[in-house]
Length: 112
Image (cartoon, rainbow, N blue to C red; front, side, top):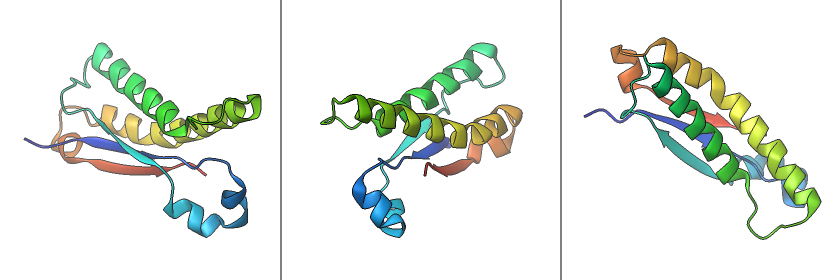
């Protein structure tokens, strides 16, 4: 069975991130979104993939310890960037639905 995934990487906005951008990209949290169980040719399957990617972007961008308004704003911004960078790969997977390319694809996306 082929495992189909979309990778999301997100970067939390911290002082270290601003001071050391080269190192920050290496420390970015990453998650996989699997969709081999979905029928991407169907409307429900396509929507399920988009929902999974959106939830994954929010999950990796949430700073569990920061409950401030600034932290919430940064988390939302990070999630929007991660989602925007993942959407071209989602659209490619939807375009290739049912083909060997879609079944074997793996993508990587990083939010900066």
